[in-house]
Image 1 (tube, rainbow, N blue to C red):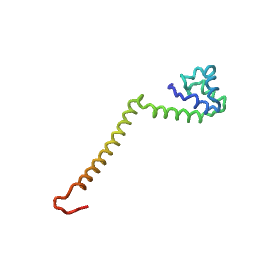
Image 2 (cartoon, rainbow, N blue to C red):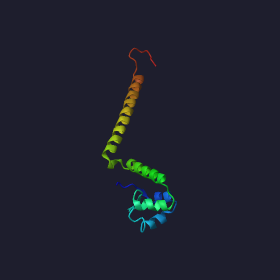
Image 3 (cartoon, rainbow, N blue to C red):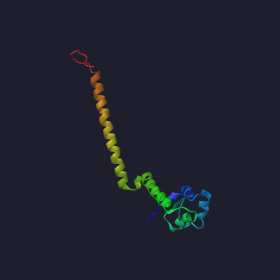
Image 4 (cartoon, rainbow, N blue to C red):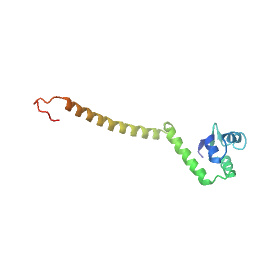
Length: 122
């Protein structure tokens, strides 16, 4: 099973407790679910901890989905496909901007270039 880790502060908000309480729990009942400064909310110890505090499965599922989405957005370089997609979007956006800028420069050049016939077309 994959790890969906949230910060201890996020875990505290979800559990309706303090960060200090989560830190303390990471040294005892949550020790197996704690991964560095984060808590794997899909781990059975975390699920049990949240259930004891009245956190329903729907809230855990929403937190899991949000954590997974945030992880993907925050670190696209960890998934080459996400990074490639992001770079492709950026290139398309920059290409469109370059085309608009080129067009604007050409119109300005035409407007600033004197007409050889002496007739003003502006």
